[in-house]
Amino acid sequence: MTKEIAAGVPLYVVTDWADRFPWLFAGITHAGSGPDPFDLRLFGEPASELAPARWNDLLLASAFTAMVHARQVHETRIVVHDGVGAGVREAEGAADGHATAESGVLLAVTVADCVPVYLLDPDARAVALLHAGWRGTAAGILPHGIALLSQRWGTEPVDLLVHLGPAICGECYEVGPEVFEALGLEAPPDPAPVDVRVALARQARAAGVPTESVSVSDVCTLCGDRNLFSHRAGRTERQAAVVGILP
Image (cartoon, rainbow, N blue to C red; front, side, top):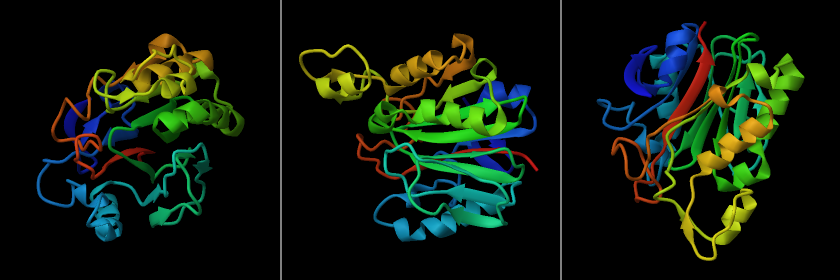
């Protein structure tokens, strides 16, 4: 990912996708990108009551007419968005993923150590965006997302592109053996570091996505770029991962 101004918003963009698909908007906000509202640190405590205004600011700065997000609960519900009216919309009920093939609709999830998972079917021009912590990953949110794209838009996994965005890395995220087991990874006898993106990449391949179609950010939210928030580092605000088809 590289820092750019995309559709008027300072972002880390998914570089390869930006070069190949000029009709696509995909990236993640970051701190230190200039004056508010783009730091978006206000998605965290203690100023979370300002989040609605920050969502609106982000939408107004982009080329999109609508933005959708949801209350996230580390589960597998993914909402399909069709016929979305203008403005910022919060999905009804909790959800950890969004999907659309409608242009002008910006999908958003908030993250700080969890993995933002971007799914793209270039032929159908359908996109999905998932919030994947270890619980959501273990519950299968990525296979759910791939199946949803297939059911809704006829996406073949062999044609799908997957990008695993900035998240806490496999050297920084120490967890107990039960987490390894939940993720389908070989469990060590004692707590050890794990990279959730490794489990997600395996799930994508198991679902039929070619290895070369799965890209992984090399950015760690804890030990890497200080412009990204990290729950484990005590920087408990959130960045917003976004993807959409430009109007």
